Image (cartoon, rainbow, N blue to C red; front, side, top):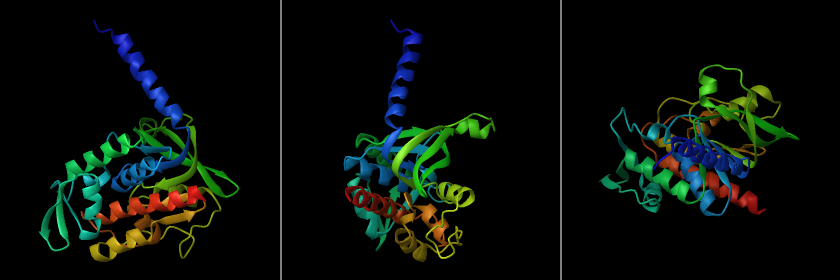
Length: 258
């Protein structure tokens, strides 16, 4: 016999446990695209306490749609080892070009992130940051539906040793820091430089190069790094996104050890 109230109570109790575990973490990741998922999985596998917030119903960012809704993606040779690590089948198309099914990629990245111990909370938006002594030390969260409905509902806060902005093209967390604080970003101007037009070859190298701590306590990864540092977009080639997520995790692990 199944009772509806017991089902409801189980869901509420289970979510409460996940949320409470996520209020004080090693790393809070803002955005569940490929860079965010790889970063979360790598950190969680290393034994760190990680929560990933995704404002939409599903994780994966732009990877689901491949190129113009053809759900295939391309990765270059340098990044193929990451697909191998997550057991994603990659088919060689030409030298340095590998094809993979976008649905398989997202599903595998999300599966491995959760099974490594990362908590993923979808439909949650990061609307602000916590700052102590000019250092980012956490994020301010609310339901995405509250944001969409433009309701005045106060948020909750999450404490984190490090925060990673993987919100993609809009670089939303860095944008909050730029608008609401006096903290100077580690760019040429101290401000967000803005994403440039398509140039895949240059962009794929730049996205990994620009994955770094943009201000104390806050790292940028994925397309967010491109937007912040003013490098071009790259379109439906995702090797740089995967490599960027890995690099962000490695940098944070080094900082946590020290």
